Amino acid sequence: MSDIITIATQKGGTGKTTTAGALGAALTRKGWRVLMVDMDPQANLTFTMRAQDQTHGTYEVLTGKMPAADAICTGPGQAGKPSRTKEKPGDMPDRKIIPASTALSGADLELTAIGKEFRLQEALQPLRDDFDYIIIDTPPSLGILTINALTAADEVVITAQADAYSLQGIWQLHSTIQAVTRYTNPGLLLKGILITRHNPRSVLSRDLTGLIEETAQQMQTFVYQRPIREGVAVKEAQASRQDLFSYAPRNKPAQDYMAFADELLERRQGDDS
Ligand SMILES: Nc1ncnc2c1ncn2[C@@H]1O[C@H](COP(=O)(O)OP(=O)(O)OP(=O)(O)O)[C@@H](O)[C@H]1O
Ligand SMILES: [Mg+2]
Image (tube, rainbow, N blue to C red; front, top):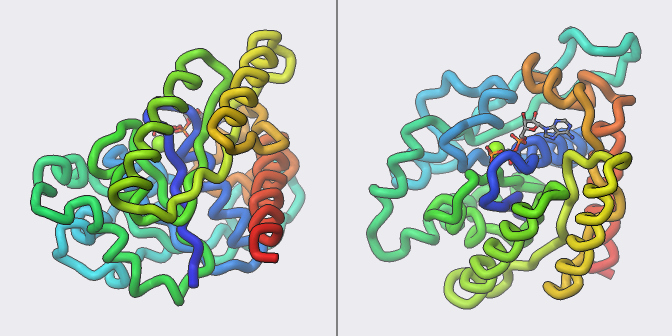
């Protein structure tokens, strides 16, 4: 039975898509069966995973036009692609995604019937034995697409940059999570806050990291031990549409994201035992 992890915050540009992509790539490299789901009409993850030419995706799945299994697109492996280093990190296995398209932006208006919050949860149900992890990327809003992603999930990870607006965003998402656990998904767990785009040399960054830790305590959750540092390789990898580990495995953000995946897996083991 798969574990469904949603990456969310309604604040834009806090590294949701980067985190979803890197976590998916890290878990795939570790040998887990991973499905990515792009719930953002901006389709950034879909683009990076080279799946943007598909005629079907999350829109068709949410509107009941297609079963989720038929909407899965297999992205090409990364063998033979240019990389930043001469090091050969080993071929990346093929990765699977249910892509997003701009048609998804109409879903807000189209999904009005009773049960609209449960569309993704229902659609993913038949796939839960086929994957170990299903990772959902969400748009920077708390509309019906994010509500579907939270209703479908077992766990939600919040991404936050060390800035004042991120803190505000964490609280706003927290109230949405509380509403979701009350009305549509009582089992949803807040599985930590990940600090992204971190600059260890900035004093402000350090101060705000402290505040985010306090906020996490108030929410009875935690901050992942290792923040994800800024690194130009993130943008470069995305521009060349490769996963971070194939493109620049020794780069700081790649190392940090691997440590994040390790911590997430360790905490799962701790929960299971
Ligand atoms: N660790 C990092 N180092 C450098 N750049 C980063 C890092 N993480 C993310 N970025 C860059 O920051 C920008 C925003 O990241 P990303 O698209 O992942 O955020 P997002 O939360 O998904 O945004 P949106 O809310 O628009 O969906 C992107 O251009 C990305 O390349
Ligand atoms: Mg995004």
